[in-house]
Length: 150
Image 1 (cartoon, rainbow, N blue to C red):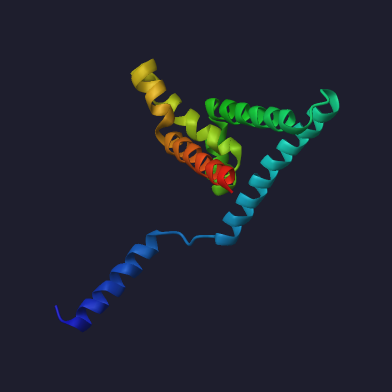
Image 2: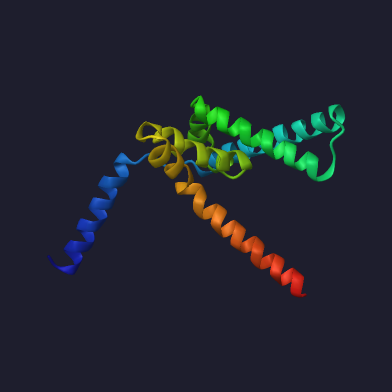
């Protein structure tokens, strides 16, 4: 094939492949991600206000309680298969908040539970979350040491 024929062949092939691929709707996807991520954050804020007024929690206790409740909610929704449907339509809007982290830990654990408690549930639970935890702890330690010596 000559250079000109190869260019035409490549253009035809790309046009053929693109004919099967629906156009991406970037604005719609970004809007959904923003709305779902914002809704998750609003739920967190609602939990914060409820815990603040009913249990008189404040400071670190309040932040920990809200985080625990959001993680529990994300894990329960993952277990019932609801979070996956949310993720399919919302994309990054469901991954970024703390509930997305709960989903990333619970999903592999649920998927591989048939392999047993040790090799399935325990080992696969940290496939995605493990590096996040390891690097988070290392970064926290590094920042703590820098803060200590400054």
